[in-house]
Length: 254
Ligand SMILES: Nc1ncnc2c1ncn2[C@@H]1O[C@H](COP(=O)(O)OP(=O)(O)O)[C@@H](O)[C@H]1O
Ligand SMILES: [Mg+2]
Image 1 (cartoon, rainbow, N blue to C red):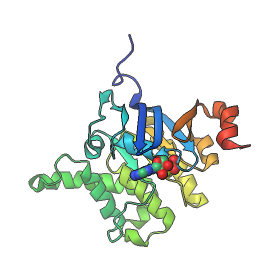
Image 2: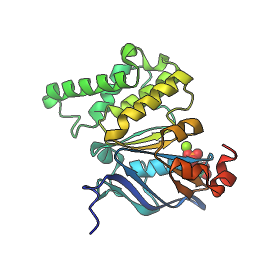
Image 3: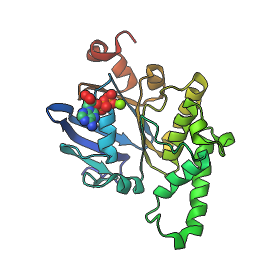
């Protein structure tokens, strides 16, 4: 008998997800599994549907068809905040930081969003301490420990991307959906982020959308390749590297 997901390593699963925008099929029966202890990269050309996939898995908007399961439960109808409270964290391709707040304040706001009742101010002292600790830990982990009081809007582009990841981590997620976290980062920031992903991997299920192929082939346990809303191949980095279809459609001679 197959094990239920709660006992297996699969934390998040998308089943046959289709998304239409008018006549455009942005995703066509895409299935994906994220396991604890594994980094699953999703690659593909611009417009392939990668961000749409993350948006549907995280609950930003619903699929036209298909299901999303989180920890073995069908969450297709759940809102994004409800999924976030159940351990699903995501970062955005665009920055979503509050520019006039400090690094620490941004992380604390994110940490508080995980709490079931952020408006319950009468319970706030203990909650606040937990949020502060989570916020501090997240900022330090991404390498912003020496910039806690800096105004977020004044950070470098790479630091803003780091803050975006910190805000995701501050919510204490088990599943991380990261949309191009390395875009615009310098070499040193990229290395730091790859080291962080390596540290997070054992306890998390990670989906990484990324264009930096060196980073993808170094970091990923599994790679899914999308073209025009369809999965054309999925497997180990070696399998993908040697796949003739992937070479023709996407990688060239990488
Ligand atoms: N809100 C939207 N309304 C209409 N079309 C959209 C919307 N979001 C994405 N699309 C379209 O869906 C396709 C996939 O987009 P996206 O998921 O952003 O691709 P990727 O992240 O792989 O570059 C593109 O053709 C894009 O123009
Ligand atoms: Mg995108």
